[in-house]
Length: 226
Image (cartoon, rainbow, N blue to C red; front, top):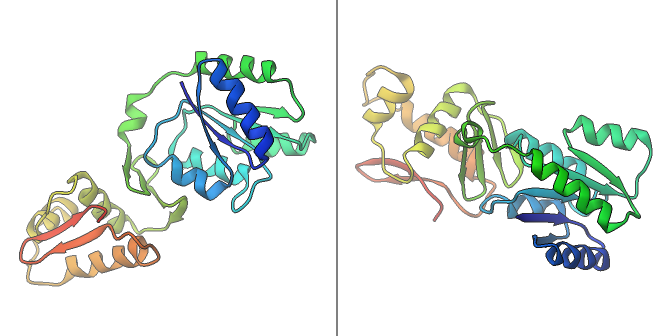
């Protein structure tokens, strides 16, 4: 079982990781919220442990972001904040459990094992999530994230992005796009497709070093990290 730990206290992080690994878990350690979200983009974990008070993005915001595209992976909040209002905030953001520091590691282990026993894999949910580099597309909720940041798209922009993503790096022509995204054959000499591709590039690529949407001159468009 693989666990991803968000904890900026280096001593506690090392001790927790060592304890979990002694109990047959693999534990990766992350020290800030933004790096944590980048870590999960191409890696699979069975459970997340989140401290709240960490740099760049706090654990509650990380929890909420995860739940926008992953409803199943168990999340345990580990925090020095013990007020009922803090716990309420965590459960409102769909955390599964909350453990107040300081705690006994054995109690954490009991809670981890309890959640993992109840975890039921859902192929239907996984099928509705598309991950390409740091881009996450939730087809069910029609939400898009890049590096953990939600990107607002119109319905047609979203449909076009999904079509490009589901092509799995293959080049698709303007004709294929109009038939599958617009569902009719308007004149491909118009610049409608180019306009929407540019809309997507501004929202998906402009703020990021790695560009995902590309043109293959004379053939069409494809989505792939380069």
